[in-house]
Length: 368
Ligand SMILES: Cc1cc2nc3c(=O)[nH]c(=O)nc-3n(C[C@H](O)[C@H](O)[C@H](O)COP(=O)(O)OP(=O)(O)OC[C@H]3O[C@@H](n4cnc5c(N)ncnc54)[C@H](O)[C@@H]3O)c2cc1C
Image (cartoon, rainbow, N blue to C red):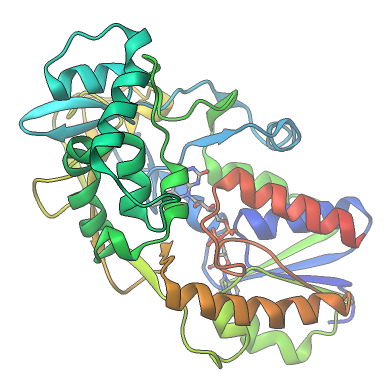
């Protein structure tokens, strides 16, 4: 297989971006994907009710990075979609993430927006957490105080991660905005949307290049002895690459239960979180994303679980230390100029889609 100067293991967004950029540099590239479809975790398909389903849970494209936005526009048009989430707690729907309206509702107040920041600061000060906060619990309490922490985060986090919030990294908290204004969008990024024909079609378009060949249903580990490329871009599991020699990197998984119902609308927003009630964490109603019309609707109920398909990295101390050891090994391979490790699995990082694309762009630009 010397015909290929580059081999990419994995046809998710990391692999597809890398393959496209290599091909556009004139490099003949083979993409090896162990599943029978491309797009990895952002895979989607249209179901019998005419609704586009995100196979691995809801995916909303959002970015502040203009170069990434321009890159994806080359492969799909996007529907302008602003994501909104509600949180169901104490028998009511609250706007989430927390904004001025959430605060008024939770405390039974009618504070003007200008007073929200001071109110939050007062709540946080009452809670007295160590500064700087060193875990997820303290980082959230330091922003919003005990009442809002317990209403929206404490139990949700236990369900989601299967451990006490004080055992999780404070970095997770940086992913959750808290707003002192009335902006009720989940993301405030300037570029947001959903690919009009789906993520799978977008990734297929990225891979549609005369210098790219795609092999589906093939595990790279089973083929690697027969491949001798100048460059391998690896987007699979980081620990597997090194025979798990420093121990396994842990992931949280999800049971996703899909139901198609004979009703036009199931819930008042695309995603509703259930922080305190029930065993599930959230329910997604997919037809919101592309404003699809159907007399039926499809929902997805998420039940977190400790094992299965690797969904979320677990950012506790053990995994952080293990990751550092593996990343040193990956860096040694990358230094040879013949390897790149890119993506949520290969870097064991919580990456959004745009961050994966950006990482691939940067690594390829430095290499080619
Ligand atoms: C529930 C959930 C919701 C999310 N929501 C959002 C969102 O709203 N917005 C957002 O920006 N991001 C979201 N994300 C993150 C997003 O899914 C990822 O950032 C992105 O899809 C990761 O792309 P990737 O290519 O790094 O990994 P993947 O998509 O996992 O692709 C890796 C590919 O490599 C293949 N592979 C692995 N090992 C091998 C091997 N040995 N041989 C061959 N192939 C192999 C896999 O089968 C897979 O297809 C969400 C993630 C989850 C879990």
